[in-house]
Length: 96
Image (cartoon, rainbow, N blue to C red; front, side, top):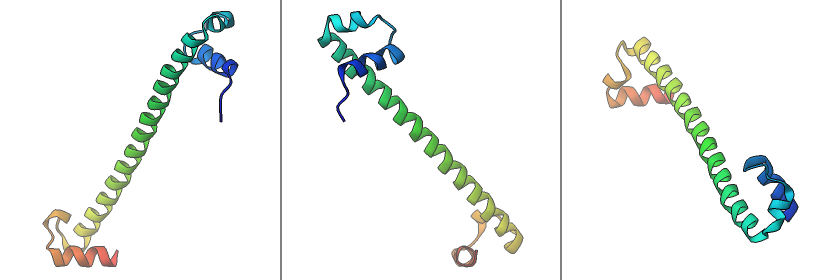
């Protein structure tokens, strides 16, 4: 969807600097360049933040799963998960 020039100005006033509308209309090429640069930066920042949230969620899930299997290993075999043999690991992961 193509954004109108006026919508770009409104966005710039909100996220860049609240210059008067006339300032933005005075030099449309400058306004377009500022909009492209600032909007791209804004999108990249949002993407980085979302990626960070997803990574943190995955890390938490892995930590929880690791903790669960470590506790299960202690309960069943009396040893840490890292001390189990391949056969014991296979049984543990297949059955639980």
